Image (tube, rainbow, N blue to C red; front, top):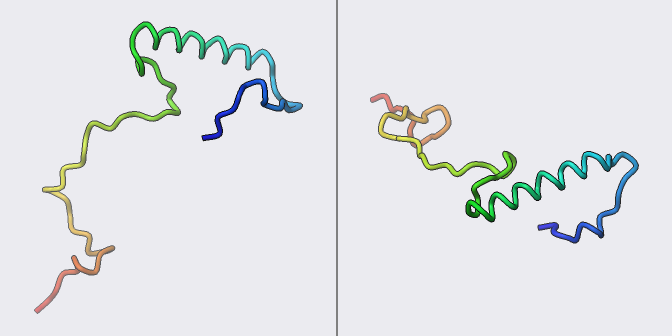
Length: 75
């Protein structure tokens, strides 16, 4: 998963320490809220969303342009 201690990360020439400090503060606030309100109360947008829906397939059009088995047959 690429997890490693923060102290072992090698900095680059383009790292901005002020942005890193802001990010650290934001993560600490998010952690505190998740501890108080329950795990998963706050997440980052990059972590995705739970899909609680599924496509209804009863009105789905046929796949005859991409599936040979659904090709219409003329008699």
